[in-house]
View (cartoon, helix red, strand yellow):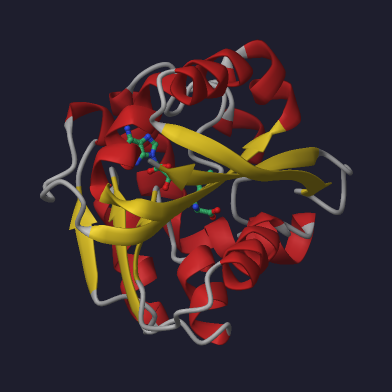
Length: 206
Ligand SMILES: C[S@@+](CC[C@H](N)C(=O)[O-])C[C@H]1O[C@@H](n2cnc3c(N)ncnc32)[C@H](O)[C@@H]1O
């Protein structure tokens, strides 16, 4: 029987419970639906940007909202060897565990706090998790807490959510508070099938 298509539902979730249900049911068909059927290019693009901006392949990296591990796979292909992943949904983490890219995979709600000490990582990356009805701009503070001063955060956000959900105002506030500096912003196609664009922001953590 053909798998139910889930991508249209992903922007309609309303709570962590909705996310757990949707991604719990989607985990085993997520890669096929996104990568093969929708030409999902976000993980490849964001991983390439981190690889360009961070020379140290021994850097400790946390992948926020790692899902099934598409970002970790691309980072591993770029030569990074110390990647941890955090996600809300155990079924997604179970698929990520099959990719052989992560040292640790941790189940946690970013908005409730990540179970890591301050400044545990040299860099953070997140693709598709800061988006409509998932994690909003408020979650960025928790990511910055995890990154060492002088470290990097690469985040890819679909341009529609970027415009409507207050990301620019959040980044402006963080810069004016001296908590980070914007090193680069660029745009790239998230889904080849629809041409939906994502904005990649590279932050130097202060
Ligand atoms: C669209 S998927 C992106 C997964 C992966 N980064 C990728 O690009 O394929 C969004 C992910 O965010 C996770 N997520 C949603 N809310 C979260 C939260 N509050 N804390 C941690 N992860 C969350 C979901 O479980 C899901 O795996």
